[in-house]
Image (tube, rainbow, N blue to C red; front, top):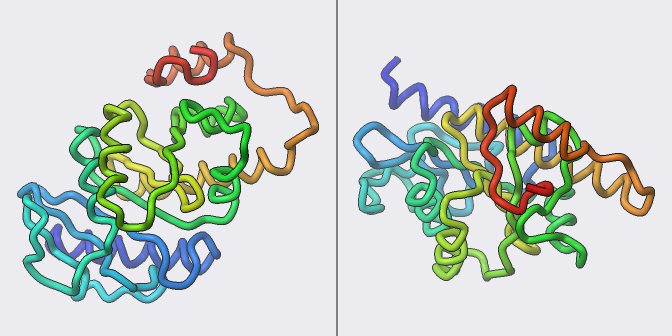
Length: 221
């Protein structure tokens, strides 16, 4: 199987897994993977992640033009901005997962660290999560908001919309998106109960042992 064929199969396999577990309903959500020639594969517009056809995925050239497959998701500007600012990113997952969307609507959320340091795995897989204001889906202005983060965040919450997460592989991006959703769920379960979060010392230990890079101001940094 060629690398292109394998990536197509992987996108469909992970998409189906996310859909079947209720992490992105209907035709919501999109996935992209960067290719070696600088172009990328991305899920088509109005396609359910649960029923993707490998042969119909949108193949874009490095300038974002459609080369083959169905018309791409309208969220291409969102993906483009994250790839441009996160040099190491090879894949991006955007979902409408319930708890992450709920988190993005709460008034107390810090845009520089949408979640406190609740678990080690949240920090290890997501780092810190930025919150950007609401934009209409597909609005090119969301690209400017992402660019304004200057590549410091691999996980971002779009207010009243959902998470967008970059990874150095498709698997890493999917797992980080799932970790973000689980942490958002924990936050909502514990909201108002004054839970213990990881201390600054515990965060520093994780940063040191696992070589994490957290944006300034995140988690007391």
